[in-house]
Image 1 (cartoon, protein in one colour):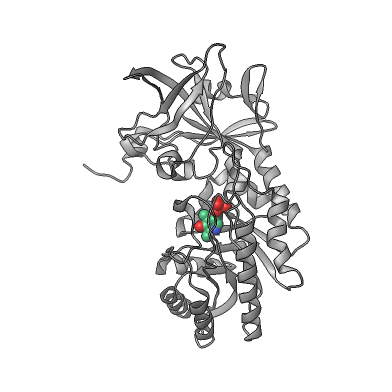
Image 2 (cartoon, rainbow, N blue to C red):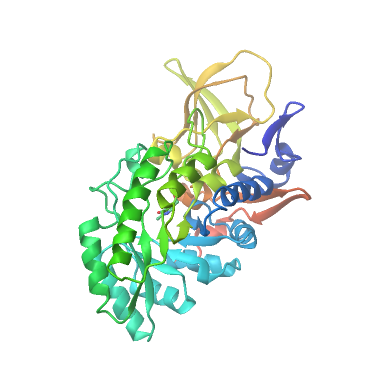
Length: 413
Ligand SMILES: *Cc1c(COP(=O)(O)O)cnc(C)c1O
């Protein structure tokens, strides 16, 4: 479901023709659709309406302030993984009382910042972290609300680089160890057990691993209550996949069933940490064709966006559809669409059949909203792209293209 479509032979974001944006701002540029972002948030909220649910948008998927602000206004909480993300949430007007803090490597400073901000809970990933949290909270004369991120050991059936809930992953704690940690927490005055947490992976395209994980975690939650621990929250993480090309992830309704059915009859506040499903299909990366070349019978199209702008293809072998913004008539040819970065993995699309492309033509790299700009770097001293938000009343720049001076900010000769 998205708002990028062809109108009279030109790709539009909502009612805005993409060439209009490229003419003013140049390329590469990320273009987001506000209608898509809002619709995704609404559809997901509606699917969970029958339960007491808090959606905590996973900031790392796309952390632009305008997008955080949009979700904050829609009532979202936030799932953060660093002090920087907490600062962004506050800057965007998000409510710290609706923030959950995930991640395996929180520093003392980050724990302190989050305690001072009064976040909803820390999703703790190890025994040592739990003890640090206790110590930092005591030094501030506070009690830190926490959940242990348990590792339900289910196979999420996703790419191995984004599976996080297997026994062998660095994330989470096995159930047996988690129970011992909750027991210990009773004797640690800086801690307050608030819930249980899990997150099994990303770009999930099947509902069954979700159901299996929720069943296991719900069983554990009941066991904790049975032991008299004051838990009230069950955080089932994020991970729902989207369609990049031919994937058929569960619908939001099917996903909600997989989460809610195992919780039937349980008194609990449900927390979700959706990232990709909210933003993935809400943006394209606009780029321009620079050169065509051929080498040993292989054709390449060199464009002005590279792996520093959109890392997913190079990092996870991810597929993004690539569409000419104004498709020309003519025979299609198969080619690799590559960026200018000096790395062989800088291939944005391998073996793609495209209609004729001329120098200067615009292309849209589709489904670029999640883990796109948030993973962009300045490798090869390439300034990061501009970001644009399209809405019903037009479009606006929500992040300016970096300038050369931004590249060396903080450096000295
Ligand atoms: C990245 C992450 C998410 C969001 O994952 P999506 O696949 O984008 O929904 C949620 N929770 C945690 C702990 C994460 O690390």
